[in-house]
Length: 158
Image (tube, rainbow, N blue to C red):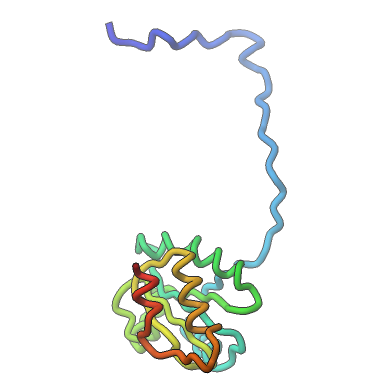
């Protein structure tokens, strides 16, 4: 006979109506989103006016790697709060700007400072890889120089 031999019988009577003990929940301060979703028009303004370096993530709701990256980007936004601004653009909603910027794969990340593209990467990156790229393209000493398509891509993808 197949069955659940070790399952006890549910109690009847007053025991069934005991209040459940609810676990205590930590109070969490509600903060504004660190990774801001913006439109194509807002991106143009940010690119022209931003004083901070920008990490711009082109994503789509249906994209698995994009959804994987969201918590990684949130960690980066928290870590670099006040030094780097992290933005996200839905490529399905903002097809014009995605076409202009030649977004062909998702996620696509743009690392921009003072309206200058410092680095572009297609694919998902972990927090540590994002840190490496950010440090290399935004905070590396000026005399060492930064070149487009330099080492961060190879190191980050490894």
